[in-house]
Length: 213
Image (cartoon, rainbow, N blue to C red):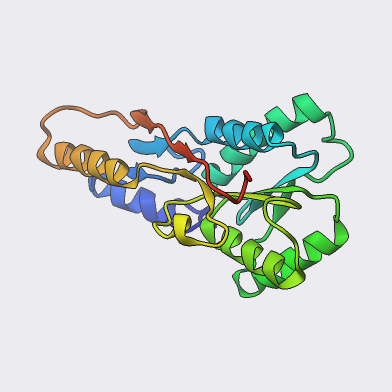
């Protein structure tokens, strides 16, 4: 399922043929099937609290999709915390869409030029964080002194980047393991699993130098 999937016809076709369907990591809003996901809303809140605790006054959330439930949930949690504490939702753009993969670098340059007050960035996926680090390096923007950067990412090299990247990491192995177990159970019909079944796993905050000195 791609980040822009809205049409469920292909999934409905599988189910009509009694082929088991399990969503993992991502879920398709409005379509019921067993799923294994992470606590994205709470993690959005966690990201916001971390940046605010580190002194950010104008943090923003960079998203790659307005269709993907995980991005929506992460942003909703982020905006809930920042909005309550800063009361800026009416005056500052809390979410910025960077959905065009071909020019993410240029989009981030434009964002930082138009909104020079930004002092914290939450990247919904790691490619946005990497491009942010590149932009800041080339424009001489100090991280974390000037802008703090946090990413939703399982990037194994995050500790090796310069500066090392603060991440909220999903338990990718466990997500896959539980999704496979559910799928096998459905195939072998060991027990009935309803379309409403949902397993939510917790992600973890890994604090590194991109958000703290």
